[in-house]
Image 1: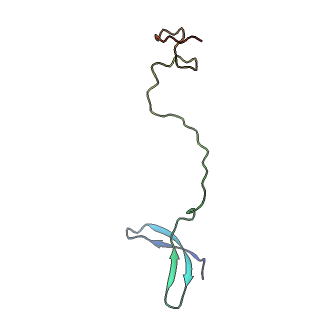
Image 2: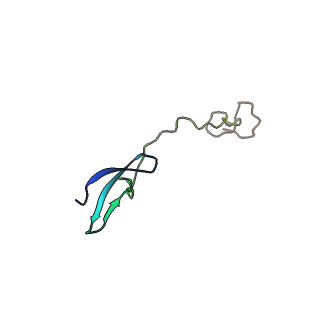
Length: 77
């Protein structure tokens, strides 16, 4: 039956989902692509942390200058 879903095993014994793509008299062709192969995937993510050290020049005012914060920048708000 073409389209039949079944589970094969890889050489290490791990399950591999597959479907029957074509049946001929002497050959059965299997499709072992992931079921999402070829699909467009969209993710909605939130970056919680980057692991990067904060910029030591950021005064928190939004312009990274340090107006009045004592960082030594010449920028004026």
